[in-house]
Image 1 (tube, rainbow, N blue to C red):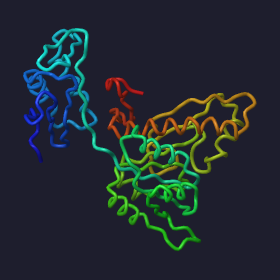
Image 2: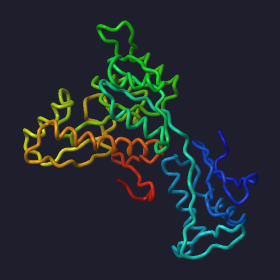
Image 3: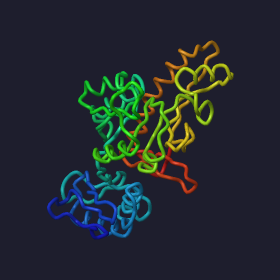
Length: 315
């Protein structure tokens, strides 16, 4: 285990320092050419707030150090772009914690449109993670075909009656471990996740559901059945929910939702189209947050997403 604390990186003068704890080792990048004296002072303060924190709260340590070093009265100051310049009022010192790129597994049973959105976001660089493997219970589904066409390995789970291959729950866990998967994303996967997999990936499995849970969720509520039930109930709003996965259908802790109005003359198909459009955007946004370690857990067990621009605010 590396020594807890922080140190000034002499090999990168005026640009960075390294913050270390028993759990992570991250470089802090100074973007505005601060003087060596300023960086060392920043590092000295950071040493007091970094030890033993998790990566989720690293941004709070950065914020605390910034406040103490750069302002004695909550002033916003900045280091000039010219080397050796003193801070000027009216600007802000910026620093960022470098986060390791995450490894993702996606589970699908059908066309995999959410899977495609996540993979495309990864390819264009807006998502700090990579889809390394696809798991499906239908080897010929659209999502599996898309994965093969993009060089992503496809795993069959669980084994179907008419399939010659297929893995057991323990085999799936072992396989995902070999891929060093950090997070599992369910994207239209219709099978119940076994307890063995949930225990192996506690607080690391997400699912998306096409209604505002806890309404219209549970066994039997999937696809068009959900939208028909929403319209029949007279509900004025629907929309996607992203939640952590437990051992039951659609009962895990809710992480994010988005409202979609139900119009007076909506058909199930029309509502489904609008909800799906929101799903594609919301799932990518949530996976971006997960990959950037911006999900934190409240004391009562409720997960929250930190706002990227302001870690002290949540969505």
